[in-house]
Length: 253
Image 1: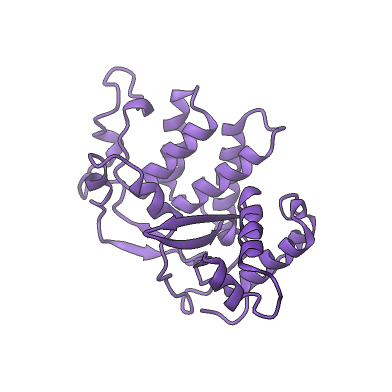
Image 2: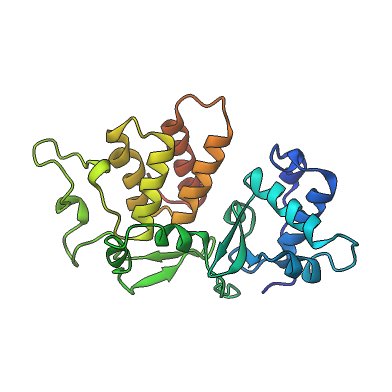
């Protein structure tokens, strides 16, 4: 794990950060330096006390309340998995840039693992049937499966989708069973942003997935959009975020 992390100047004017009380801002900022290369760290208050703020007189109960406050404004995911607590920074990839030759995969679970485990047992085997062919994105170290969106070497899922209407060619999201983390993320984003617009599932969210948008960014963009109550067309804002992401990476539309 790196000895130092980037602290973007936008943190000073972040609406989310400025909703926190002063000591909680301190805890949030200091936790950044202790996260691994994928923005994760252990989430037990005792661990945070011993690792992040060992020289404060904060009680474990106070640290727990601080973590809840940070989670409430959606700056972190904080959850329990197999009787252990974990933290994952929601906007990690947006503010941290790690060189590929220095990147080290996390040994801790992602919140994505929790979301996958919440699917029905009938769906779980399909999600685990992901091709082992993968590479690491140079921009942020997110694992991207090269053949994740194909039924075989030559036939894209879009051409053999069992959930697509044969007449209209439109995928019905209400019957769609995700078969990968990316498909799960795209469906969850559609459900949270445009559940009233079935067509948008294919034209916005599956399209973003097939362009190569990492699952973590589906959750990040969805969280950011839902925090802004002034947004009228959530799908359009999601599309703009996707376009901006690929523009920064130099990928053509």
